[in-house]
Length: 116
Picture 1 (cartoon, rainbow, N blue to C red):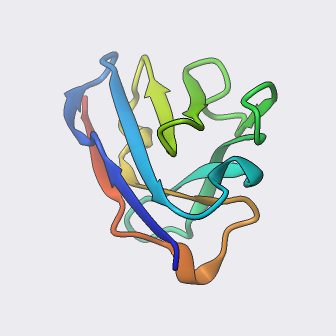
Picture 2 (picture 1 turned 180 degrees about the vertical axis):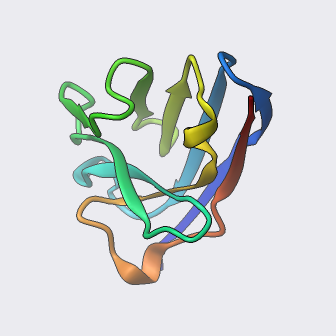
């Protein structure tokens, strides 16, 4: 049984910052590559960032590469997404999942709204 619970979203002005958290209830969490994904209204869910099992390697979508930072704490079964210099186009529901994502593991997500 895998449960992923996202938190930390909210309403922020353009240029602001948010830190998203993902709590993972999964055995052997450290074995999984983890990722953040997002879905904007009327659009397909898209990849945002991913991090390897140890946290030593990460990769980002071009649209967020110089603004977002993914990290993880294997001792706490947590994944984080630090989002800086937010833009209105970052408005979306943000989800964490293993990467490649498993369809059964999607959680409720956390809403991020960036006002201009």
